[in-house]
Amino acid sequence: MTIYRQILRTISFFFLILTGSTIYGAVPTPDQNSLIAKLAQDPQWLKLLHFDSSAGSSEIISPDFFISSQGRFDPASELLATMEQLKSDQNLDSDQHGQCRFPARYQWLKRKLDWQQEAKAQCRAFNEWAGKQQIDSLSLIYATGYLDNPASFYGHLLLRLNSQAGDFQGNLLDTSIDYGAIIPEQESPLVYIAKGLSGGYEAGFTQGTFYEQTQTYGNIELRDMWDYRLLLDADDTRLITSHIWELLGKKFTYYYLTKNCAYRIVELIQLVTDAPLLDINKSWVPPVDLLKQIKQQSHRGAPLIGSARYIPSRQKRFYNKYRQLTENQKRALFGVIENAIHLDIPDYLDLQVTEQMAIVDILFDYVELRINNTDLPEYQEAKRRLLQEMLKLSSHTEFEEVTSNAPEPPDKGQNSSAIRIAATHHQTQDYLELGFRGSYFDLLNLDAGRMPMSQLMMMDISLQLHNDNLQLERLDLLNLRTYGLPNTGLPGDNRNAWNLRVGWDKPDQQCSNCTIASIDAGYGWSRMLNDQLAWNLLLGGRFAQTTGPYGNFAGTVSTEFLFSASPAYRALLRYTRNDYINSGNINREQFLLEQRFGNDPEWDIRLTYQKAVADEFSVGFNMYF
Image (cartoon, rainbow, N blue to C red):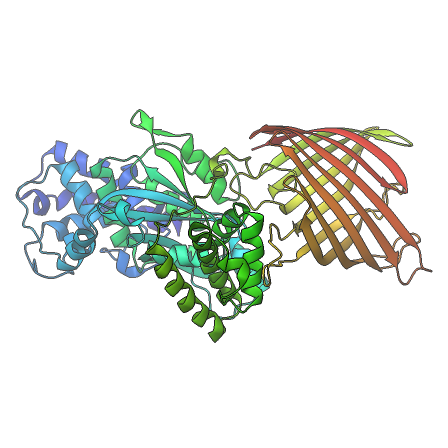
């Protein structure tokens, strides 16, 4: 097949030379022939075709993206067909004219060939789409991760087309461009993961209003968003926008770890820059890593993207407002909710008007959050009462919106992969621990751009090196843990803590060469004891291979404290008890104390003590990449 495609390209090259007169209107000169041949291999032309040179074909699988029948495999053939269509004076009033279907190709070739006299197609559909929006800039939008959906574990990137009037309306009516797999309804998470990893889905770009995205990500899935304005000139902005028009409705093959949403969105930006935006030297493409890569790049001597603008989720806005309430206001808030969100209670009526407005404002968010979980008619009625109350209070004084304090943006966080080396003292021997984490973060990592008090680790491996002997200590295929915090204690605001771990580990620290397959899971309760200290209690179970005195099933109870004293220090204290049901009532207690020092995005130091029959102390160094 490769030889066949090479022959086709050679034939196309000579055909392009011989037919150059249809493009130039006369017999082409040798210089013109050379220019056309160079254009066929121009990096930007290949980007416009999404041509993968290593595969010998475009990554777009929709036939209607190509004009030439061999266009998917032959950039020269597609260039010739494109130039002929763009220069055609036939059907200039049709939206199917080449200038209308491929405005980015037209813009690029006009600049490359200095076209001046070609006939202009009317392109009503494209001009209405681009002109109505009055696009003057682009923004890269990052949505934080979401543990309730495997497709959203790692966060999400999308592109917003900023209109001239958008800044005055929070850009809510501006168009946003998304990329995602086309997944059948009711697809199970396991099927999604299997097909997503193997290229079992088609995918494509879609458009909608940014309001719809803020509703989905910020108000329903409760994910924070970050807005990074791209610092591009008008020509670059127009070329990317025109190319988006060419891609709408076209299909790609979707790969969850590599050619995913983040890759395709950043690929749009890569169209106008030679900076290595997609070169992260990994076999997987986490959105936050690409974001950090873009933040470090320049374009024509200037930064490629500006500073981040924080767009808090409805839940974050709700918690921020709650933290700023006085004790009297909190008492009134609890009372109103216990009174079915009727405001005729003394604790509310005794407040000042400005204090009452703050209560009504936070109740709006509370009701919307409850509607997300259970859309009962009484909540819709409550919204009507709150609106009437706010209108009444506004006649007495002006309402001041509570602003949310912006956390550290995701580009300030640590990269998603890590290697570690630790010197470990075991009560019977000393050894060196070597570790690698494919992704993503643990409870002690920096929170920038991530879910606080949560953990998502995949392909986390730990090896023990002693006397030139290397053995497996632990391998976590998946290790999820979340506190479900913060919460206010209000009715309905009581998310639970949980954990799930799948992999191989040791049942205790005393045995040697006893690593076994195991699954641990738990579900329970959590609380913020103060601003720096979180606690949880989990009940669950452990299922594992039988080894030594241990059976294959144990009931589990665990409790832990997470202490965040400063950005440079965090500590985790955990106690776990496993009671093995089918092993003569054997039980094992485990203690873990791990401390993180440092807040550099590229490294930190860990001090760890753990006891599971035997004691271990270790000093480790983590490097993030």
